[in-house]
Length: 414
Image (tube, rainbow, N blue to C red):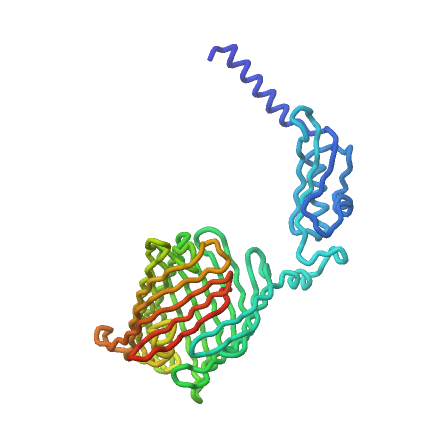
């Protein structure tokens, strides 16, 4: 670059910087209000203090934003200067964008915190049938944003097979690292399917989860239970670390995916301090004509004897179909299943259903016994499954020891 050319470029750059540093003195030609659904435009405009003809300077716009924010009516406020035309210089429009607080209505433009919380209340019905426990029904109330950000305060209340009342708080975070914090307490009452005895639990817990990838999470949970069972009252303290993997795109009918959970628990129970390992993993492979084969394996292994209410059951629609739920109970359990499923209709249909055939194996065994020495039972059968939006249903007919048994499970997916 020659010296005259360099000097000319430098002068142009200095002129541009000098021009950009000049304050805006052109007047406001138009004012628009966006984002308000209950507060009238005139009220928002009055809060800004802006008027057509005022200078569209940064100072004027910042003062207007501060006035609207100070009113306390809105969660977020932005005031921007926009050029209405590229052909007409200094033809400025001011855009005022607001986000109204929850609970705002034409009758109450400045709701209190109780009104704001209750306005974000969600009502989620609970209806499910669990083999061995029966029908459970109830309602879960949730308050979104109770702790700021993406958070929720939930109050589950159910009756029937599981009687439960609880309080759970959750806060989620985006990105990797800490992704979820959860804490809560609840009271539960069920009838144990294996022993036909009432089990009551008062539980308090806290949990942290972290996202390693979009499909992998780790968790750490601490909990304390007060258990009433068969006339005794015991305390159970547990600390759990787990790893969860889920690559499913369509959980209702997975194909070419793996999912599962592995956990290690430290238990302090009436029989002593115990370490228990749990793992439950599944893999699905897509086949021609929309079908899929799914393989599942699970194992629970404790290094010592456990009280009966902490032992693992097999049988029923979740493990070893063809046998009733809880027909065998032990400190440890292991099992596997293979199923071939074929869905009907389009994956985009509102109601999806299909048929499947399966083979299950399951065993329970005492602590100190090797899984290879356990006696495994087998069940085979056919079934039907359906998904209607958030409701899932399964009906399986399993055959074991020359006898058929029907297993039914359904419930909301919330």
